[in-house]
Picture 1 (tube, rainbow, N blue to C red):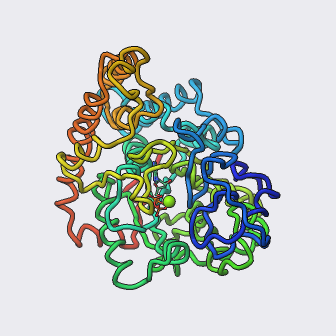
Picture 2 (picture 1 turned 90 degrees about the horizontal axis):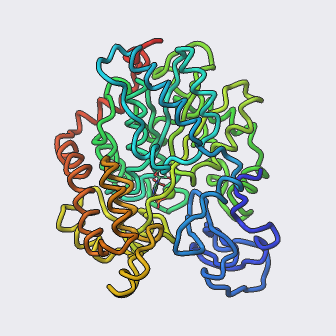
Length: 455
Ligand code: ATP
Ligand code: MG
């Protein structure tokens, strides 16, 4: 299993020693047990000396301030770049679906996240587009690990993309909440604390505006009975070696961790949804929009799909929204100290937080005038680029800032305004209207295929 080549070679992996539940610099991988290797020698390299970017489901850390090298990710993960040809094809299929759904007016344009390269990589998107062209039903699957009661704006990236795809393609959608993962990997106890996090995350997710008739959201500990037979089929096909090689599990890890990948894999197959996507055959294709850190789960899934005689799930990968402290870290629920903007923050809070964000605008006004800003490292500019629907605004901000005619303060103010005016103020109004009854509607086991147009 070669999906995590961004990790150093196996020999480097063996060098690391005792790091209790933290980031192990020499590995470099998130250490999920008291010992991350069997060696007794202690290596004391600092994270800055790490040999490479780290992209795993549990840790994302870039070696330099420009953030993750996505070209390298593409070549190491061996996924496909979304090129101009693929964009044109996607646009064409969206236009075809627009007609089939009987919607008037011009077909919708590609989402800004797609147009601007935030959605940068895929696996088998062409196969999904083939199915859609043949009017076959495709379902969407995405998810969230409930590790904190309030989600952050980094989570918006895959959810905004998923909402767009559901809208323009009219697809049914399943959303997995991996409470079991957070119990096993983050020690969050199952019980009232987890229940409260899950309930709050459910409302946060629903507030993205997913179609209640075509969307089913489930938490693993509650839904497991329905998908257990599919989980078991996957568990029988995925070897311990494959799980260890993919995720860096070690012998002292509990067996729950080693088994978990089958649970995240299972919703890739329609057999997990006998009462939600009730079709007799196994051949309904699944498209998974997610950030690239989740890819290893689905590489494992794809590797066993043929043996299970199921279609391989397709993927659309997004880049990461950086933490406020800079692009060396992605924004993360589990590392709030790196700087997060929460979905519940008001405008004043967002402005205050963004004022402290890492700036690519150079040290002094003089530096900025002479050299312009480094847009790749500037967190506020990344926010504008990610969240504004206005192409002209994004272009003029980039040009002005690069030329030194806009200051870092200007761009931070603009980023706060864009995030608030275009996204969060609307999201918060929807969130305030969501009741426990709305949650029951989205989480009840029911046929969501019936509401999806057959084509
Ligand atoms: P934790 O730190 O507990 O792992 P998280 O912040 O990484 O939480 P998850 O629930 O693990 O969030 O991730 C849910 C989805 O959101 C995944 O597809 C994940 O890749 C994506 N995601 C998380 N953080 C970001 C980010 N900063 N930018 C873009 N996508 C993100
Ligand atoms: Mg995560």
